[in-house]
Length: 294
Image (cartoon, rainbow, N blue to C red):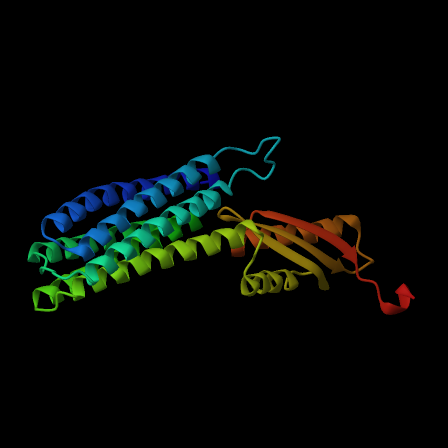
């Protein structure tokens, strides 16, 4: 299965998330408003933002499948990252609105305890999203898709949010009516935190940021390649779910062109086999001693 077929497989997870979020948001908002649960209403709005985020992932996966062209010689893989960036702004806006609503509810003069049914709705939603998380996590690992893995992590956070909402509702039923709006505040905070994490990771990738530990791991694999004497320079950047690697290696100056080319091929094979990196640019230079330079 090539990388485009793997991206196509990732659409299944995005569609599953969208379907689950649509059903759960409708149920949560209806139950939350009818039975007066601020926490469940906040959780419902959280799922609405998740629909947008999952749709953004789906759109990004669709665009990423377009082959390279004259304007995009490296392909369209960064469409996933741009879509996630747009979704982060939408999520942040909804998160702030949920926080404002929760604060107003917290300082309201009269508050009624939400119906117990809302707690069961929240717990049922947590079980459902845990199942979606497990499916998307396993699929993302199988096809090595970072966008889908991010969506899976969002699924898990939504399950935890629903558990928190259930705790707030049950506490309110036990004579602590302030616990429900406090749980809504926590939900709003989680929405904003998730939005910030998506924003940070997206902008980090779009500005060609790359994890230093991962780069050192790539360096170690190249240094252990037979024939490589030293690494003069190594750079990497994220392109959607792919990594683009540029490396300058120093080799024995007595090697022939054919032998140097063999080393380059071996580096490319090791990068693909050990790190699943299929776009590697290797530049070979002779290792020159200090005496030869002078």
